[in-house]
Image 1: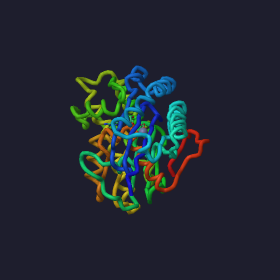
Image 2: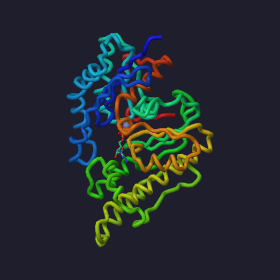
Image 3: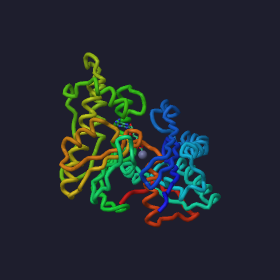
Image 4: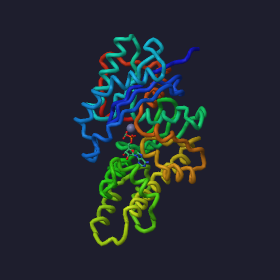
Length: 336
Ligand code: KG4
Ligand code: ZN
């Protein structure tokens, strides 16, 4: 059978991205235009600014993805696009563009859930090689700017929700604490960098264990950091130490619950995904504690991109999923 090439389009938040992926695994191109600089001065994503930036970037980004992949419209089997969850105005740009392109080029259109796409980043080949054919069930932790969810994946497209955050997402907590510490946006990478020079033992921060559940809560931790900062008498340079203590607290809870869930549900592997899974301390902690193999995408595929959308779209395509021309965005879409 000949190769199935899918064009993925992603505009759910503040990255305008397009990619061409072969057979759900091989990345032929992966173009990401980040708006981070545009939003940095607001300390977060400004929805109105994001939609407008997507409109400007989308067509050139898609063209570049096709060019770099040396792929013509005739070579494509389908177009996969993120329909949610995400910012409604941003999603609308990608979905409407994908619809127009699919209609104009006579290609099938595949709707993709952004959260599911994050998981499928684990199926993509990288410099480290090709991931195995996973044996289900696998345990997946999605940790991003908008989501923190533990799911049992029983097969392609089959999820059981085990738990998630009751307040802030893990990435949101990194971003908010980054701002409190006066570090550049987004907070995740800034905190990780600062923490590398810090001593986490200097501050004792709370962990919300929510015993007996696979749920998370990070707002108390954020408040504890804010309270410490308000005590203006912390002597010496303390930002790296507080960043390290915060990161350690988040990682401790995420790793403990992920490993426990994998064990309870007999998962054959743990798959980390989402922007926060780029964090080296999180990756190391889960690997150290888990009894089963732990996988995570390379950092560039942890954060928002369209290769993961095309990979996920491939498995949907193979399952016969096709969108109608009435396809709409689903800003509050969930998995399972
Ligand atoms: O998956 P993503 O790119 O977008 C969403 O779907 O939300 O995740 C972005 C989030 C941001 O909150 C960012 O601070 C966080 O991922 N992040 C990190 C790291 N890199 C990105 N958090 C911790 N450590 C990192 N190295
Ligand atoms: Zn994302």
